[in-house]
Image (cartoon, rainbow, N blue to C red; front, side, top):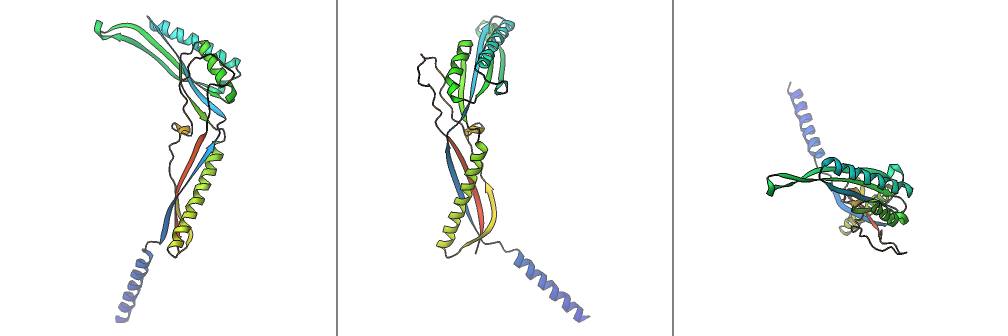
Length: 234
């Protein structure tokens, strides 16, 4: 009986030792790698609209609808495809004069369109055409790249390489070296293309006398990537 108890105690002690050994935190080195690419945009998203006021809601809406049809026709004449035109906003509201006992003075109707221009050389022509057709609002221009996925992948790869190079340098400075990747995490980027990101906002377009030179400048897009990587420290 004593022999059995001794064996059980020995096994229990062995399990505790293994458990303590397994609970030891791994030795790692954690680094952050970043990359930034400059890319020339090849298309633009234009946000434009029309606003009208009238004594009745019906007339305000009818005037906006009529102008919107002219704008759509003008875009079609410039060979802008239907898939690249989308109604983004539709608004109708009474205008109230609170000084006259909540009296409705008129109605304001507004409709906006988002238009993707895939040939940047047409951008000035598109803005001139829609303004001639009756558009009186241009909210901005967001320049974009049709190969965003490719550039994002390239930026991630360069960021990962930067993280490894930094990890190797840190380990070497302390007399160590790095092993396999222990963990990796990509940090979110606030880019203009997704609403901040990857695109550039242009100034509101102003009617000016046309010249041979374009009135807009696409500049460059900035594609960023950042990763946090942990490596085994040897």
